[in-house]
Length: 292
Image 1 (tube, rainbow, N blue to C red):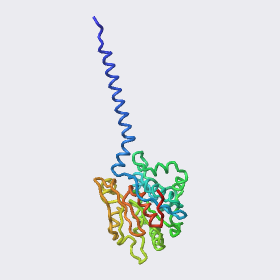
Image 2: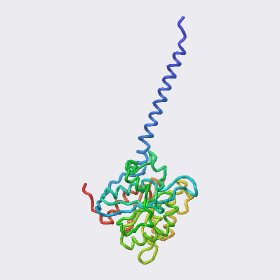
Image 3: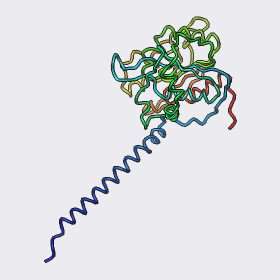
């Protein structure tokens, strides 16, 4: 009689099943590594900018960020959203400008940890992670109190959840933005960054944002991300201050995008608008189109 072969057959079947499982795991891993970032980009996250680019050699730009590092008092770590600082920095730098980085308190700038995750990181974030000089500027940021804003041609207010705690309530920032505006400097920012304009005045003494066409992160995006603990919400605060608020929307507003220009004031809706906002600020400051 032939010997039973069911043990051998079972081993073959088990081996085949393990191979199939391994292939599925590898395929899923490749999709997550390669496909997820591409999918998020296709949905609208960090869209490729194909508009005009500008040069402004010999001029100076200042990027201002939050110094607040947590949601609430000692809650989840937060800070500036990475690309809202890195994208404008490299647009200004590549335009030939000297770029300084400052924060409300000076010193090490807290960065939203999730903004550098492999599937969320923008190209500018990846460049930053290899840039020792820029990292040093972030680690030892300038304190806004010590700066004369009128010595800069462009002043950019970066966003992130931390900005909801200190940009809109800093009397020093409000005073210095007021001085820069009176000196005909180009102002702007993205996401929560425009909160830093709330305490500034125009040349007639009225709130700087009053009657200005502007955008910033929407109430819808705040609600969709479930982070309502912050003391200030940009759309709500800017509307209350008299801004003519504009925004685009999507099924999920983190994938929406809009940039609004009102003379020397340029604002971007959220983390997707950093590059375009910076380029339009360069244009407003007298930048010349780069040759293709």
